[in-house]
Length: 72
Image 1 (cartoon, rainbow, N blue to C red):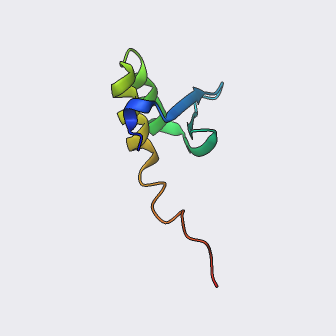
Image 2 (tube, helix red, strand yellow; image 1 turned 60 degrees about the vertical axis):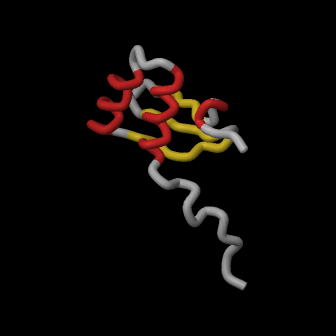
């Protein structure tokens, strides 16, 4: 079972200063506005472990509830 050491999160900063966060190959969330500015500043110069924690925190609990199969 992988953890944050496996670098599951990646990100890209767009021209309009939004942060697009992906987990594996799936887009998870987009951070915009003041929250994006703070995240970009925190990611600048952060080591890989710290960056993974920042990205995980920015996504919140994105996996919680996403595993549901829908109504039966």
